[in-house]
Length: 216
Image 1 (cartoon, rainbow, N blue to C red):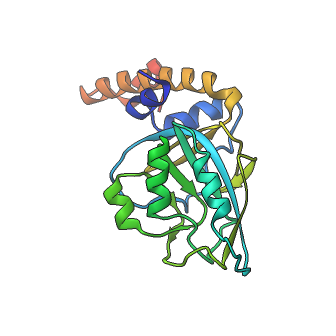
Image 2: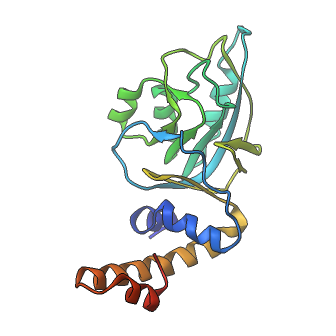
Image 3: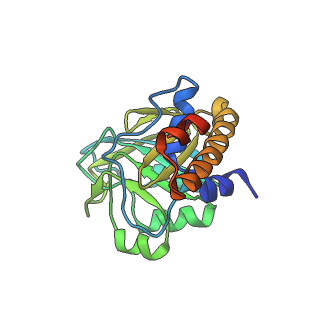
């Protein structure tokens, strides 16, 4: 089983957040306003493919060249992470970009901006997390400025290749250098939580279970 499949099947953002806390990294959770736009998934994990957008009123002769280049550069097991500066001016992501991302092997997309074509994306089954929905196109409203460069999304710094894990609780950014240590601690904590749950279900007192396993 690959690491990403292991995370999707056995871990979740809360336990990963706790593990990062224990390593001294307490600001790795994106802001709460970035939410799943549909419910056809549980835990999504992949490596960051970063994209930066800015608001712009300029109408270009070839407005989508940069977006096409950025999407065609997506690698398998990526999660597309789009920084818009919390734009409310347009929706830089939609169904065709999602379809192209699936073909490239991407596992999902996260953005601090809007998305459109939501029902079609839901039918596609592609996991997308966004601040909201809006039908406006990016042409003449937004401009892609870079991709595969460091960005800030949801008030968290994201570098290309960072591990992104997203579920209904939120979105975690695990820096590349911390992946091994974070997953190791998360695996141990899940084992402790499973043991704690089993004893609590049998009627054990929470204080005694916490004293035994040290997880809550």
